Image (cartoon, rainbow, N blue to C red; front, side, top):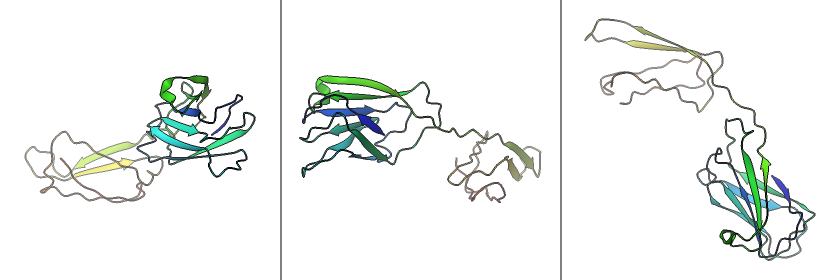
Length: 188
């Protein structure tokens, strides 16, 4: 992410970048940010923090950020949402002092969220067969999931039954073909 101030920011000012809430919480993802750009001859450097779920704060740390320089904020551990973002925007605000809650705003602007390639929901066929169809008779259920493409690693396929199977009496097994890797368990 890049920004250019286009105005003078006090050495004890601040810049905030607010993400739209369609993103996953930056705090829950343990995201980190680093600011770069410009030439700094001081031993103190500007820094950024992530104080809340959808906000990055940038502090000049006693330095004057050049209004004509483009600065970069590198954000790690962020997950792109699987949603169309055309109705969402980021908001960048600059402040006269580091207390961003004082609302001493110098400038505020919104910019469009980036275009993200969406992952479509796969349409799969689900087949169930039984070894016995009479009531109150022990039977084996076989579920077959037929998908047009592989189900990728770290995906979960859950089958919700209209009754509560007994996990200690029921047995579960799985085979592969469609699944990247497989395991099976029964839960209530």
